Length: 86
Image 1 (cartoon, rainbow, N blue to C red):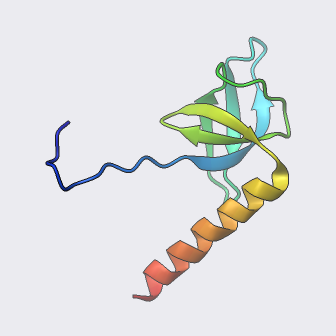
Image 2: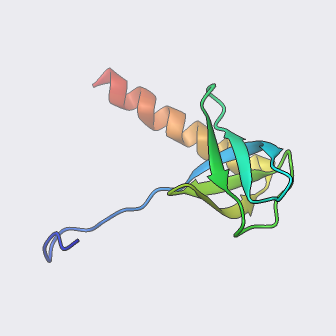
């Protein structure tokens, strides 16, 4: 998709915690910390139940440590709360 020379496309990856992985280790249920859970593909990472991963477009693309994941989730919550105030 071409948007023009002065426009930029931004991709966003959201951290979440793996709460379940299927037997084939292809799909996992991810908890995003606010009660939202989604099934994502985990074949690109070496992740286990309890790990935090970055998810983009339905794929886990990176394993994160818990501290980094929680800090990122806190930043998202802060941005959303400021958006609601305006």
